[in-house]
Image 1: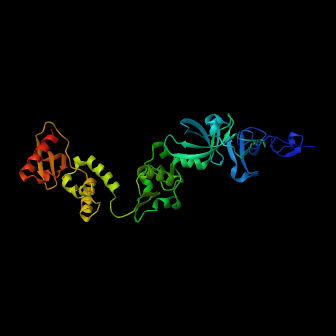
Image 2: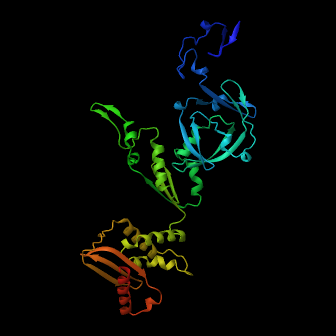
Image 3: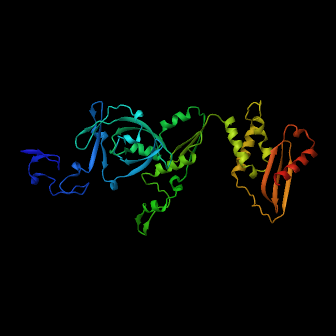
Length: 384
């Protein structure tokens, strides 16, 4: 008489000597008398949908032992929830105590357990999951299961929340719909710009004829190198409009070759922030200031382009300002032009700080002596 054996999963006579697992060690739990394929320490979940099962794509393996599992804490509904990470899973599960009952929708999904029993989930729900470390967000459809079951996340969701998915060209097309002008940049020796911490550096140790060596910079040969460098560039440039990044290639896209009013506003804010480092700012900036006045047509001329190039050049150069020393003699030097007045604070002939402002329409009609006096007053008040 043959029986269904709970140890090997096959049929054989009722005798332990007839069982192929007898005396063997399980590769999973290290226990005796069972195989990994029939190990009770691992449960498998298969997804059923519309009455059709798909065991090839939907198998999900999760260990019961906490010390053997990899977990991550994510934010769901403004609360931290611990998930077990399963790289082989397409099914995402969450316990009912982590969701609001009225948000749960009916589902046709059934879960097939390791012991060949079926479990009907409580429903399904779409939740916004946030990685508290990177602040990456992703909408995830979960299968809601009873309390006591394991919260599980699959590989694709893990990559999205880790920001490790490399972009493809199809993802970039919507961002280029209005673009007419393009420029491409390439990062030289890209991965070597990422410094490894001590723990990660030791993981790259290799044996050489001269002894052990390890990388201090991100090497090109690692499987995760491209994803890590992509994430670093996204952190640095991802928030900029018209900038597309694919690993070490950066595409700059614009709708036209002239500045837009919104871009002028952003540039004005930056200029005002750094005006103390810019000499002759009022005079240099006058062509751009003129086209931003009320009831003035916005026409980007060659004069504006030259002024903008001068500002960029001044902003990109390291300023040669000296640190202020209260023990040294101070000199204030002032000047005026047709469009503005300026002043500079000097110590031993070295500039400490610049200041300037544009003249109002009425001040531009003053005599030269009046403008000179105004610049002296401005310098004294500015550096008082």
